[in-house]
Image 1 (cartoon, rainbow, N blue to C red):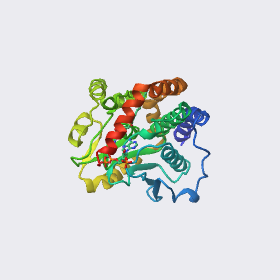
Image 2 (image 1 turned 90 degrees about the vertical axis):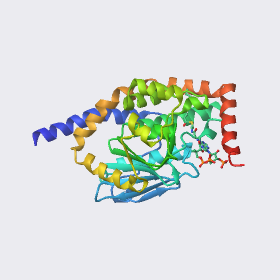
Image 3 (image 1 turned 180 degrees about the vertical axis):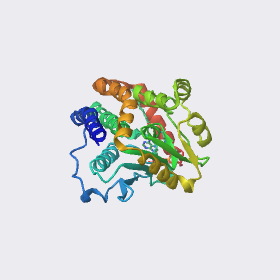
Image 4 (image 1 turned 45 degrees about the horizontal axis):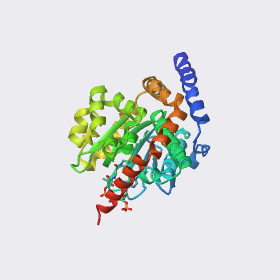
Length: 302
Ligand SMILES: CC/C=C\CCC/C=C/C(=O)SCCNC(=O)CCNC(=O)[C@H](O)C(C)(C)COP(=O)(O)OP(=O)(O)OC[C@H]1O[C@@H](n2cnc3c(N)ncnc32)[C@H](O)[C@@H]1OP(=O)(O)O
């Protein structure tokens, strides 16, 4: 009993600075929408939350067609959904998945990084940082049920999760492929990948912009499990049950111990990282190559 109380005090003491740091951070998505029954069933235009209160789990379905690109509005809705679930004591875990057939997420929204003004780029990047920080440090168990292709920012979102289950479909691939677009994954993208697959594999994957098909993704460790497509959700559910069997405070503290140094680096360099992004993305050469890439995507159809 005394040990349990002690752990709760320690948990609160350790977790509180994180909550403070994030709450004070710019780009916060607004106040929590209360706890309790009111938040158990909700949806927003781009995020569908299917709660299973009995299991303490909610399935968060990304629904930003056609490709779940991480636009500013979509990121904001995702963050609000996460925050609502974190603030409802009913929930201990979430499964993040896609409602767009064949696509988990096409990554950052290229139209947010192309042809806009520096203020917009800064606002957008702040939201991308916030997404990473909030998911990476979430006190919930977060499992990615990856039911589609997941390049760049889509891969990053998966990497913030505690466990990744990928559908075994030869059309799907996952990786940080930024170099193929002529852009550079920032240090916190890189750190997240290094923490997941190790330095050498990450260096090779990042330099070559590798998108791993399922078997390769499993071999290198970008995902934890590859299963037949129709078993992705059920596998995520049973993995979730295993994770939820662990005492929450011990698991949460361990997660923070593992992830704190990585998150700290961005938290202390956040403004500089935004300035760096804006400087980089405003370059004529970068704008030209992003524009050309978008055009190529559009022409693919015609
Ligand atoms: C200092 C640091 C600086 C910079 C760091 C920046 C880090 C960047 C991270 C990123 O995430 S960049 C984005 C990377 N993503 C990609 O490269 C994926 C691009 N998309 C695709 O490859 C394909 O669209 C697909 C996901 C494989 C799906 O293919 P499909 O054939 O099903 O669809 P289609 O290509 O026809 O696309 C439909 C529609 O969606 C538009 N689209 C696609 N991806 C994006 C995107 N990431 N952002 C915005 N829009 C996107 C595409 O243009 C089509 O639009 P249209 O219907 O108007 O033609």
